[in-house]
Amino acid sequence: MSQAQIIDGKLYAERVRAGVAEEVARLRQEHALQPGLAVIVVGDDPASQVYVKSKGEQSLAVGMHSVTHRLPGDAQLDELLLLIAGLNEDARVHGILLQLPLPDHLDTRAALAAIHPDKDVDGLHVVNAGRLASGEPALTPCTPLGCMIMLRETLGDLSGKTAVVVGRSVLVGRPVAQLLLQADCTVTIAHSRTRDLPAVCRQADILVAAVGRPQMIRGDWIKPGATVIDVGINRVPFDNPEKAAAGKTKLVGDVAFKEAREVAGAITPVPGGVGLMTVACLLQNTVTAAKRQHGLG
Ligand code: NDP
Image (tube, rainbow, N blue to C red; front, side, top):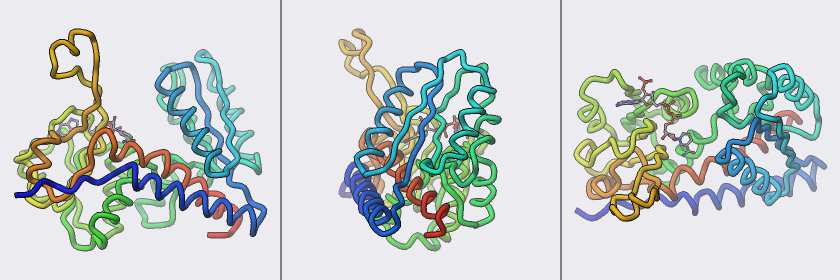
């Protein structure tokens, strides 16, 4: 059998960004509306700093208003809540993103709950989770949105397909399952207590892996011709003993890519797949939020 088609995250992310840039230009010209994104980062976690920088740069590149607020690692919850309250009122800001994880002493739930649901471009507020579960228009978490764009680009109509989502987190598993249901798939959500996970996965026309366990899903768990979306981002030592001894690491997904590629019809690589879609979808959510706040969509 021939090898699976590679679903190219770079290509689709570029398309999303180009669409966002076009829409931002139109909103600025026709409605004097410049969508704005505020990113809040607490502490100096190096990975968070990299993500935040990239979000700021990409927002500016598509013509948005972009602002980053940095609080020290020992900031208290009331300070963070005050900042969020100010941004909720700020007319130039249509989307607020709180970079996670927060330092341990801060209550993540309380902070997320303080963001106005209409500005919650990460889609993590319970109001947006509830809207999504009820099938109402919601701001939806960015990574699941990215998964759906890739699936639609690859498969077209998803109606009637059997989808298995491995993982039930609030950030990925649950919202992606809701979106697949909205797309008229027959959806199974698997998790750490699922019995005979390989057999469950083998049912899937669409298999979404969001587990956080390197290469857990093997080639013989995949139905021939299935479309595999690998959300996992795991840092592991190199196979090469010299590189491993030097402490070098590489990124792998939750799916054993080489094996899976022999069986699947299409598959996202890691890196180069879903990960690239997440920030692009954040920009798209900010435009959606701005339009809704101004009665334009
Ligand atoms: P979580 O740790 O929050 O959730 C993992 C889920 O996997 C849980 O529901 C858990 O089940 C399930 N699980 C764990 N072990 C097993 C197992 N052995 N068999 C079956 N299910 C299992 O992770 P996230 O959802 O936040 O992230 C998942 C992966 O996606 C990570 O690698 C993360 O880095 C990556 N990620 C990538 C993003 C991107 O931009 N591409 C964005 C966000 C995440 P249970 O609920 O029973 O514990």
